[in-house]
Image 1 (cartoon, rainbow, N blue to C red):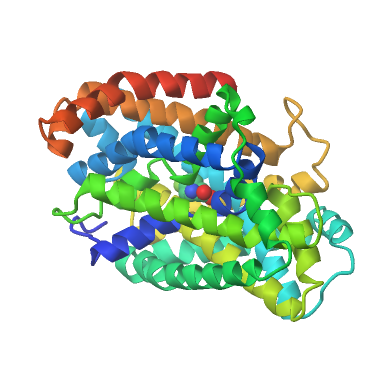
Image 2 (cartoon, helix red, strand yellow; image 1 turned 90 degrees about the vertical axis):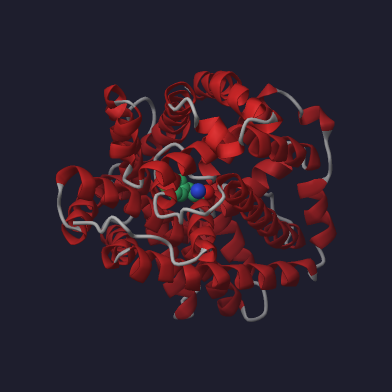
Length: 433
Ligand code: PFF
């Protein structure tokens, strides 16, 4: 059974692990693009205000609950109010469903690492990606391989597995990102790229832009599924929650901005339309890398960067499910890892095949992969976050006092938590649906 006294060995390890969870595909393939398309600097300021004053509230709540009860998501929520134990289960359902599409992309990343490593660079990436993702065997095998890779670290335990992985991969990730960003700034399209991303455009300031910024902030901080709560449960007693929350926000945003500073100069130097998501990462960028000198090197380094970003997020998703299985089914860490890996593996197969043989198998006009993405990001995440805020605000009466003390900051936090954030989350939910 899990040792009750598991703790991060240092504050840096805790921050690296939470930043590892927060920084993922969302930072690299989504943030820079939506910032550029939604008003540049105007979007950035809106995003910063929202993340610093609104999203920080559920973030602090999850850290607080984790630190206070020192157990998994389900038991923690049960401790707050036993009637709401199902909210914990809902978080675990979410954290099981997210990897079922996120790891499909992880499998594609592994394939691209192999392409650039073995110098098998296709002549046309649009054709190549379409043909590859619609195959049956290879994408499924690589999705499962990525899943096993993410499971190995939590299988080895918090200190020997998760902590070591993040302590090595996150600094490497930062070094690669900074080198690629500096290189990108030397390209001829650097100025145009930065203008696309940062140029303020006030005409985009509307309700849709605000909700887009909020949705992105929730997803990128990995809140609403117990991940931050789980990592918070390993926090040392003396760790300051509010300070840690702002450190996480700072690094997550900095990395998302650096990703844009790396991507857009490349995009504009080659004169292609800026896009987001799979087409940017698996078609446009590799196409451009193949035109650079040392193309295999740049391609390889870029996909290794993506690999680090996605695996450290994947590890946090796995750990959240594993700790809950350990605590609720009273089983060993090894058994819990194997059961969770099997469940995610089975659901990931139809999700991977959504780009090929199961392409026409749709529900509400969405493939299985899209359905998983949509239902978790647009419905479950904001819904769970709303419930966590309501439970924290109305059931843990002393939360704001313990967190900030009886001062002006504590009072503001309490009002935001009880009234403002829930109303905003309901708006996000209604528009999302
Ligand atoms: N925050 C990650 C990203 O921006 O890609 C995604 C994520 C990680 C979601 C961990 C959920 C999670 F538990």
